[in-house]
Amino acid sequence: MPRRVDHDERRAHLTAALLRIASTRGLQAVSMREVAAEAGVSLRVVQYYFTDKRTLMLSGVTELAARLDRRVRERAAAIGTGLPPRTVFDVVLGAILPTDDDSRADQLAWTAYYAAGLTDPAEAVDGRYAPNALERWLTGVLAEAVEAGDVPGDVDPRIEVVGLLALTNGLVSSVLGQQRDVDDALRVVRYRLDRLFTGRVRGAGPRVTEAG
Amino acid sequence: MPRRVDHDERRAHLTAALLRIASTRGLQAVSMREVAAEAGVSLRVVQYYFTDKRTLMLSGVTELAARLDRRVRERAAAIGTGLPPRTVFDVVLGAILPTDDDSRADQLAWTAYYAAGLTDPAEAVDGRYAPNALERWLTGVLAEAVEAGDVPGDVDPRIEVVGLLALTNGLVSSVLGQQRDVDDALRVVRYRLDRLFTGRVRGAGPRVTEAG
DNA sequence: TCCTTCGTGGTACGACTGTATCCCCGTCGA
DNA sequence: TCGACGGGGATACAGTCGTACCACGAAGGA
Image (cartoon, each protein chain N blue to C red):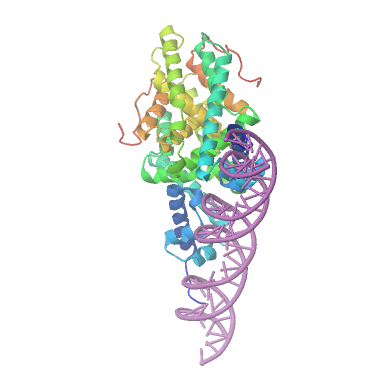
């Protein structure tokens, strides 16, 4: 056998280049040649590790979904278990908002992919879009909070969680579009959480960022 | 002078064709030739009435903003003035959600433009994105409701309205992505409004759609 | 040592794109 | 009647796209 190369590492390198382009110049600026240039390799290399453009784009959205998922998961793990529900929501929803340059870039690329998937059924985000698990988890957390009396008894955990996630997504959009900055978005989320958790645990829980 | 043609009508026709393409096959499927084909004219005609592609795309987003704005404005006008705040919110937020094929198509195209504007500063939605007026109006309505005692006194009208609009936008996204249908989205909005207007005017106000 | 196979550079092809140019036809003012 | 001009059909051009193809160097098994 001839010279052996770590294909996975190579692919990851190229995928990162792709996402860098997508988040700065948009998805339509992504061509095989541009990815090659961004990664500092020849066109042939991109062709070699991703036969198709479809395969290349698919690798991008897969990596993106993994990153966003990882971000939420890491933050959730960092605070451990058994913490007050209010804290869980604060951390998880805060992890979705683009609080630093990296997460902002990823959310930009994600938005581009999402919009593309709406009209181009080929690269729909579908299965990769996995907030259903997140939705279920948070619903469970909130349901327990209801039973524990931390929130009013007439709160519907399912609808409430759907609303919180939709709210957060809407705020992400407005932050990306620079109609609002992240601190304002965080304020809106915390205001909503304050009103949900009837003042009982107001202001409790660690802050997601140092933003004040 | 030779044969005279209504330029505005001609342009409107072409713009409609452009938006039809954008909402079905995406913004990247929009080329001058495609618009010409969709409108049933030759490439030259598109060139004639919109010298640039930039001008063409700009006409699309302008028309789109006008449509979305008109939809909210018409619904608001249809219910008259002096109605309970809860009804105002129900109608206005309901007018944003894609309840029929037309509004769905427009929201799809709008999302495409919005996403494109995030990375391509050229055709940013910027000024055309005018929900600030809407935001201010609703904030005023809610502020009055606070003073009238229709909502708890510790409600912050500004943050509350920002949250409601972000929630609605997030729901629009999920409806477009078919993770939820419109009826569910409406339910989430009404649930939130029910909880905001402390049960006082629960269920009051005309329904925005016949959805049950 | 030879020879197969992996990894890669270079390049060519056909299909698009936006834009520019040429030319004709109908119509209206003079 | 004539000429000028608005409206539009047809085509050309330079560039970029995804993809395909060819050739070559390096490396390990026989």
